[in-house]
Amino acid sequence: MFGEDKAWARCLKRTAVCIAIVIAFFPIFWLISTSFKPIDEWQKFPPVWISSQPTLQNYRIVFAPKAAQEFAAKQQGAIGYKVSGSAWKAFGDSAVVATAATVLSVLFGTLAAYSIVRFHTGGDSYPFQFLMVRIFPPIAVVVPMVILFSMLRLSDTYFGLILAYTAFTLPFSIWMIRSFIEEVPEELEGAALIYGMRPLQAFLKVTFPLIRGGVLATALFVFILNWSEFLFALTLTTGHVVTVTLQVANYVSASSGKLYGVQAAMGTVSTLPVIFFGYIIQRHLVRGLSFGAIKR
Amino acid sequence: MVEQARSPAAPRFVMRRAYRTFVPFNVAIALPAQLTVLTVVLVPTLIVAWLSLTDWQPTQGIPWYQAEFVWFWNYYDLFHDARFVAAVVRTLLVVTGCMTVEFLLAMGLALLFLDDWAWRKIAVSIIIMPMMIVPVDAANAFFMLFNDRGPINYLISIIIGRPFEFAWLADPNWALLPIMLSEIWQWTPLMFLLVLTGLMNLPENQIRAAYVLGASRTRIFLRVMLPLLMPVIIIALLVRSIETFKIFDPVYILTRGGPGAATETISMFMYNGAFVYFRIGYIAAAALMILIVVVAICFTLSRPLKRHHR
Image 1 (cartoon, rainbow over the protein chains, first blue to last red):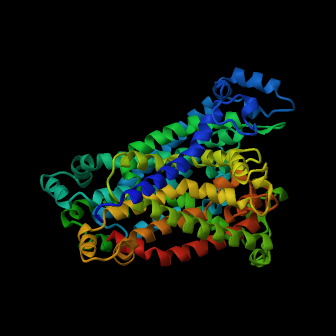
Image 2: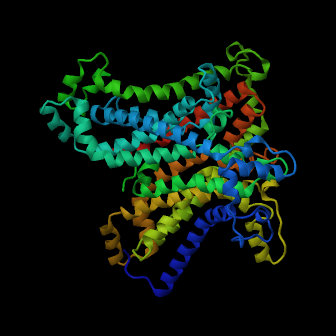
């Protein structure tokens, strides 16, 4: 844009980028590296950067209940049952809750977005009402939600968590899909209507195929949010439903505090799907995180 | 509803068919989303409003709707609660601090990526990795990094040339720093991505013209690019400051608000109050107050977003 840089300026720029990359990657590197360290290297000083005797012990503790029990038996002092529980349930629960909430959120979101764009439902400020949900600090509604859920017998159930996740990701779904629908000319649907289709049919058969990629990106984006959610999982469950984020916080022993390696192993595994999905929708991340305001 | 549906933006031929049903079609399809939001947000807000006028604590053994009515005493107490005021001030501090650092870093980084070079895409992909990670895991990584025997202290001890074992998270004066750094580390990439997108979308002609006319780079940046970039910057700062204001995960993982109450943000204060001390009525008052303030602020600030969406 500005013409050519001088050689030293370019060199300086590249160095800055390299430093940024190192800083961005270092904590992730540390998480992965710690997950392969044997127990005596977790807190060694000077720190062990890459273990010379890498072990899968931490991953075994996470995934094989037997290994976890053996590990718990070897530790001095009491260890809560949580350490010996396996992470499979957490992954299962998270998959169920995050997937169901994503499907509901995107389904409701698509319908609402269609209504907003094509029918101008509720006027100009209607969509902003949904944005409010995202602006509310969730902790402020968590307290009454706990009360409400216990009255409706929803606390510590899959459905309760799914409901909460759906509601709190709806703003993203609606605003993101809305921005996709807005890019499809209205006349296409109009033509379909003239040929005798019903409105919903016209939307599903004409517009939807055109925004399918965008809806899929929205779904993955919402899934990432649901999968990473912590506060609702922490407050709305009491042990029956366990999500991966809760499970990460569970690896604590009474005698030695946080079990660094095990936590790191669980953290690494639980982050992988999210990073994978994140890169799939990298092109759409900007749109999602700015509620469709900034498009590529 | 019907009147609004007739507004010029709605295609008339669509509406003619939709009127036949009991609930207008456009309203009906917006209902699932609306009802979900109502159950999970509006109803709890009403409960919070009621609770904030009572002194209910679950340990009292009476249902919440029978709790003793104390009018506005909770609010009175809140304003005189140094811990709450400190939490509010601290949260604002975290928001301003994080926003400033994130924005400057993101702007600087984005400017480095203006011209095309080999590996550019891969470099961007690596730099935005932090924002993809589960926040709880990121916080855990920072917990390990800032351990008194962790790598950060080791690096410092190399730089200053003598052993350095400082328990960052146990020191009331410094414990907030790792929390803020973790937040900044995780979300600068987002700001970077937003600013970079904005920069790439700038009309190149104007910048070229300024360059040909002999304006210096600094001048082009300040006088041409920055004003053009303003809407994007405002949206990025708005979105990020709303999210940072709610900051909870790193605080919970790193310190749980401690030592003492030295790192309590608003969210952490409310969590501790409700789920550790069980002072529900009191926390409900805090929650309602925060809700009102946040909503009021956002109504005034949401104008740029509104304008940009047109």
